[in-house]
Length: 287
Length: 269
Image (cartoon, rainbow over all chains, first blue to last red; front, side, top):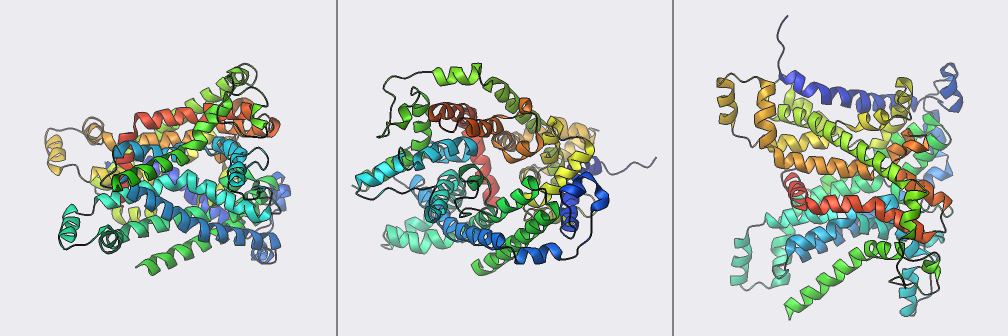
C-alpha cells in the first residue's frame, strides 16, 4: 500500500466534520430553498415538490419579512456604530496612561461577554420592568415619565440595543486595546515634543493608526449584528407587534416552529446575501 | 486633576457595567416578593438562601449543571484536539492545495451558521442523533476560527526544532504530541477556554437538539423555568446566578491567557 502524506491524517478529522456538518447542510439549504419542504414532507418525503423561485417570490410579498428586514437594519445601523463607539471609548479609557491596574479593569469590563445570555436576560427584563424596574426609577428621579421598555413598540428595539451593547462591547474593546498597544510609543513622544495636546494626538496619531483595527471590528460587528437572534428571542420573542422581529428570528420561527423548512431556507439565504453584500461594501468603503 | 477625572470615569464605567451582575446576586438573596415592591431595593432587608435550596431540591438544577458541565468538557477536549491537529498541519505540514484550501475555509466564515441549521437538524434526524448528547457535541467540533488561531501560533515555531526531531527519527504524530502540543500550550488554553465558555453559554443548539427535559443544559432549563415561574423574580435571579457564576469564575481564573490569546489573534488577523 502506498504511504500517503501524513498531513492528510492531521486535517482529515476537521475537514470531514466541516464537510458533513457545514458544507453539506449549506448546500442542502440552498436546494431546500427551491422546494416546498414543510411539515408534511418531513413525515413523507414523497410530498416534496420543486417550486423554483416560489419561496423567494413569496418572501418579497410577505409583510413580515419586510418588517424583519427593517428591524434588522435598525439594529445594524444604530446598534452597530454605537457598540463600536462604546468599545473604542472603553479601550481608550482602560489603556490610558493614567489608568491604574489596567489588566484588572480590562477584565472587569470584559465580564458581560462571558455571561450566559438567557441568564442576564432575567436581570435585564427586571431592569426594564415598567413598574418595579430600576431604569424607570432612575428616569423618575430625573423627572422623566416612565417608559414601558419592552412593551412599547417604539422602545423595545432601543432596549434590545442597549442590552446588546452592554453584553458585547467588551470583545471589541479588547481588539481595540490590542490595536492601541501596537502603536509605537515614540510617535506620542515626538508629538508631545512638537507641542501636540492629547486631543491632537488622538485625532492625528491614534485614530489614523487604528484604521486596520476599525476595518476588522467593523466587519465582525456588521456580520454579528445582521445575525441578531438571541437577544429578541429571550427578551421579547420578536414582539411587541413584531417590533423586534429580526430576519434570523423569522427564519427560526418559520423553520422550527411552523416547520416550513423550504421557506425558512430561502430566508436564510436572503440573509446570507445581504450580509455578504454589506461586508463587501463596507470593506470597500473603509479602504 | 486629569488623574482624578480619569479615576471618576473609570469607576463610573465599571460600576455601570457590573451593576446588572451584582444586582442579580443581591435580588437572588431577597425573600419572595421583595423584588416586586414599589421602590426597587439594592440590598435585601434580610438575606435568604431559600431560592437556591428550592432550585436544587425541587427544581433539580444540579442535574442540569452536571449536564452542562459534562457537555462543555467533552466538546472542549475533542474540539481542541481536532482543531490543533488541523491548525498545525495548515501551518507546518505541506500538502497539495493547502493554502488555497485554507483561504477557502476563511472565506466560508462569512456564511452565517443559521443557514446550515435547518438541514443540519434533518441530517441529525437521519442519523438518529436528535435528543442525544452526540447530536449536541459533534456538529460544532471543528471550528474554522479555532484552526485559524492554532495555525497563526504554530507558524512561529522554529523550523530547526521540527528538523531536529525528524532527524532523530520521530514520527509525525509523535512530533505533534510531544513537541507541538506543549509548544502551543498558550494558544491551546485560550482555545479551550473559548470553546468551554461558548458551549456552556450555548442556548439555541441544545434547545433544538434536546427534547427530553432530563437532558437539558442549564441555559435551556433556565429558559424553561422562565416560562413557568415568570413572576418569581427572586427565584429566577438565583437560577441566573448559578448559570453565570461558573463561567465568570473560569474566566477570572484564566483571564490573562484568554485575553492575551484574543489580542494576539486579533492583531495578526
